[in-house]
Image 1 (cartoon, helix red, strand yellow):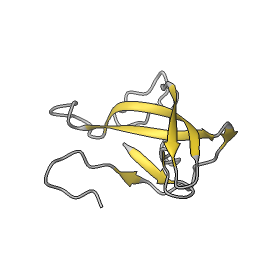
Image 2 (cartoon, helix red, strand yellow; image 1 turned 180 degrees about the vertical axis):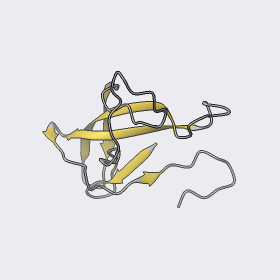
Image 3 (cartoon, one colour; image 1 turned 90 degrees about the vertical axis):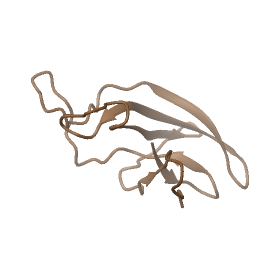
Image 4 (cartoon, one colour; image 1 turned 45 degrees about the vertical axis):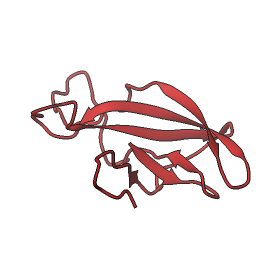
Length: 108
């Protein structure tokens, strides 16, 4: 899962890198990012000054190896923001942050 830093102390999700190319019907490359296959979701994020609504594209279980041994563990979720409080956002240059879900590692 990816996050980008928003105003105040909010954490809102980040965009996928723009350097990747979209999957086409003819593409058989398992590492191509499926840019056109996503649902949109909205969450409320509490900041130090208010609450904001963040709408993002959710790409789930994207494998990041060509021949995964276990796709459940060799995959990631990517959230790319498209609106904050109803206003469209361009997250092209947003920093990418990783959320660690493995015990024993510090996420900061």
